[in-house]
Image 1: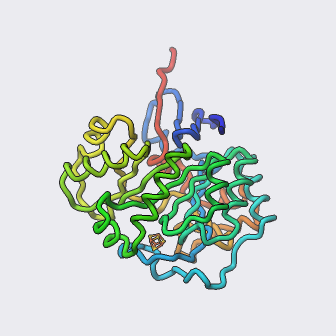
Image 2: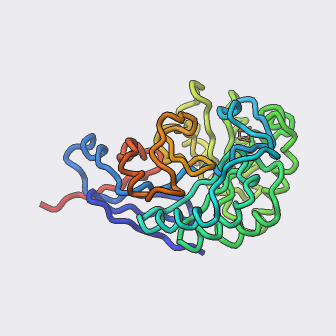
Length: 309
Ligand code: SF4
């Protein structure tokens, strides 16, 4: 099992707990909170790595739809040497986690290699999959390296999920959730918010909790109204599971594209800050504009101590 890791910054200490995938910032109570939030991190906490743009699904609301490739398409991806060198660099700089997504990340043949190499460098992997098909080798690497499996299930009702995702993945996903729970794999479910009653969400959450899911992330689509107390209500009604209701954040991650380019936003090709296969992490980080505490506010849990006078 991976251990908690820490990184000292000028403004405080960042602690990452891989067991619950939580980043905590411990600092002295600042005189000005807004100035404090402008402090810059010395390196990314996590990287949002689109390891492939191939996908075997075409979900209705997918914001990458126009850029996706078919599973058999040719694609320029990083070599294993480049992957190892980048992961070493990231770990040395104090990185904690790699978030592996796509497209569908299991369609990159190097996925198990990435997970195992990350583990060797003390980094936690989170693999975000649509669960249509999860190869045995990838599953084995997730299980053996304590990676987090993050699965997209939009409803506990088969028809609603399949309609929402535009694919028949409900049965394969539920089977994968059952296997992962049985194998004590660190499991999180992501659900795109559908307009529905709080009772529906309670029923859905109860279904997940009974299946052994301990982390649930409900993601409203941009512009969608969500009851303000939904998160608190679900956390109090479903105490064995940690629930977060949070819109997707698109502009504050360190995006890595399949060929290693680092971009401000995955598809704004005009803002490329470097390539992890050829440039050092530090050289790229210097060019990235989104590196303040404020940019990472969706991830960081703040803990302030009173300053002794
Ligand atoms: S599985 Fe993900 S990448 Fe593929 S179509 Fe759906 S949302 Fe898009």
